[in-house]
Image (cartoon, rainbow, N blue to C red):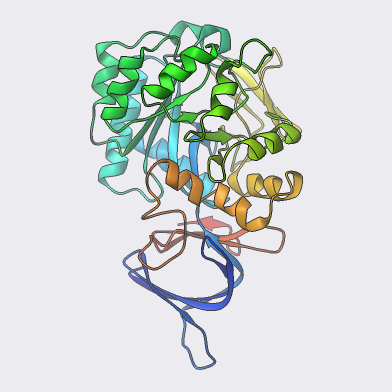
Length: 385
């Protein structure tokens, strides 16, 4: 759709909620926002709360697809379609630790998605393979390795959109971290057992994020602050947080929000294939993962990603963390956009921004999703584009 005139009964622009506003959208961008009157002709009326689209920087799968198993353009499209049902309008499909061949396939698929401007795809997250064996979590030990020329050839590509790399600083030198940052890569610390000094050296080298805060990282102790201490002490760093009630206790989430400056904690899902479909089991490197009571676990009881979607995350932030709604919405939209330097285009609904929008009902459930001005999900017909 090249043009759209939308009447929003309630409209959150990223700062505050307005009432009865008309959004004019042309070529995927918001061109004007005006007050509605009785004589205004519109294409559509949004009954509910219209909010900025959600941005998820850690998405392993969805729609019964795991990116590692389907590192293809088709796989990417299936994942974004699954998450669009829950308000995600921009994402970094995430490849967990795997072979360099799979990394290359994923990079080629991402290149194709970026080239054809696949709606909702803005880059790729490589979660590994340069991690700590001690904090590998569900990652496969046999694929964890140092950086080689093959990985650098992938990291140096300029056709993948925004690249984010999660790494363990005890296994990647500060010089290599600086090299990544100079390439435009966002470097997050995660799956790391580093001490505080090593984590701080990585931050000084340019790392500025933490992957799924609290999970798979050295904790704060009296005589050793660990990676978590580095996350809390460095105000200029941002943290992704899985707010599903399983990965992190809600009280611990509140502590992080109390310590970190406003805007430096954002929601991620760490979502796996069951999101957006009815499947309750899947294979992760030949290990069976089971979904039970909203929790994904391996046979040994360890967590293996999440079944969280962004809309559910927003509800959890608002209800369980007692964060006011506007701030909960920013944690799912503006703050991740700011972290990847996309706030000029994404994360709010103001004139000049991309028309990535989500319509919520009173229960904060998704009714409709638009990406770049195009409606890609509508609950009334239970279908994607």
